Length: 127
Image (tube, rainbow, N blue to C red; front, top):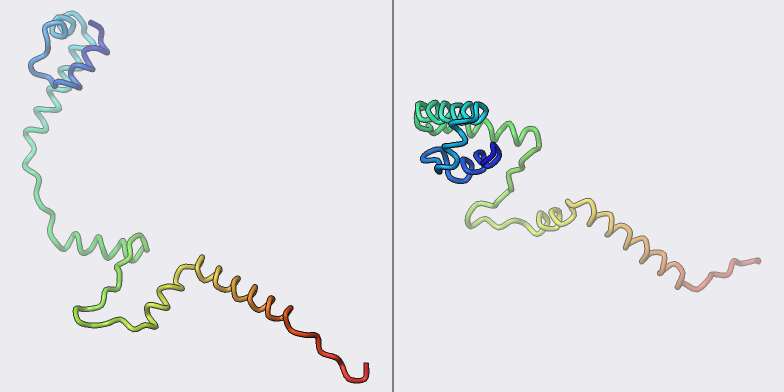
């Protein structure tokens, strides 16, 4: 067994108990002895830490406010129960997307151009 095999076994199965082949390699390899020793120290330190505590609610409120202020998140405007949003607000939301607004303006320009070309030319008096 090689060092990379020991690392793979520890990754897949954990530290205890190591298979006999891995134990034999660790006993003869100083690098793997340090590796296993470091992992055991990490596990011991992690077990000594207190259980995870729930952060106070004010922390989440403050974090949400900061993210909204920076524009990272946006709070959707949801009408209150029983309150209907106006048709104008729905229409406004439709055009809030710049791509849709740009496409609409382009379509209006094309329609105006077609209507202009379909009109009969006017004769200028005296000409």
